[in-house]
Amino acid sequence: MQEKPLQKQSQEPSVLDTVEPEELGTPWEGKSRGSVLGYRIYVYLMHKLGLRFAYTLLYPVVLYFCFTSRKNVKALFYYLHKRQGYTYFKSWINVYRGYYVFGQSLIDKFAIASGLKRWYSFSFDGREEIEKVLEQKKGALLISAHVGNFQLSEFFFAALKKALTVNLIVTDREKREIKEYLDNYLQKTEVNFILVEDNISHIFEINAALMRNEIVCISGDRFMNISKCLEGDFLGKKALFPAGPFLLGAKLNVPVLFVYVMRGGYKKYNLYAKKAAFKVGDENDLFDKYRTHLEQILQKYPLQWFNYYDFWKTNQ
Image (cartoon, rainbow, N blue to C red):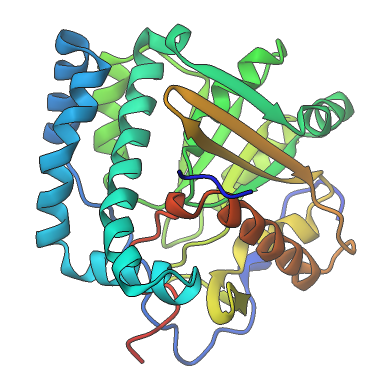
């Protein structure tokens, strides 16, 4: 089982500035494993041989990654054993299961985006929270994490029957190449990608989107060497998080929500949305609320934590 019982105005780039720790730990490297070729193969097989075959093909693929991705496996094992409290044996078993769930999530994303949405069921937990925010017509900042399958959130928004433009902030350097392929093969979507750049030009794109009353989605759980960080307890141990999402949420006069899309079983997805109640202008209070809510999500879906790197600086 996976589940458990400021006013809106143009901002200067310095909105991301905060105290940077002398030691940033082991940040995410800005790229994920995988390639366009891998996406091509899976999309082709899924359409020709079906979803169940694509899931079955995952078994040897996951086994391959378990043997060849030493650092990633070590990080996932640490999360399961030390932060979730699983036994040694159960942690190793769930390393494989965690990779498998991640693979299923990728397949589901491609299946839904390529026209197979009718095969899936979607449920809301906090739909009224989103609808209230959209009625304000001020735009919104959605803070999520690398858990579940957040890119499917656009299909939930489509169910609200409102004209929405969603902007997804990404840090993966390979996203452009992959997106170009997917745009040619899959159905067109209403998601715009804003790539995090070293010159922080993305800050102006974010502000422009909010000025147009659009939705901006950003991850609150990955940083790179170019990032400014905040530190706080997470699952019982100190960890570093990017400061940007919380500084933006605290300084911009737009609603902030925590939103996650979690895989609830075979062809089932659940969207969780919660309005962030924090002290206006206080990024630390927003940061605290975020960590608490993310912990609650991971208590329910422990295998859908997809940060496969040394998140808690265990190598220091």
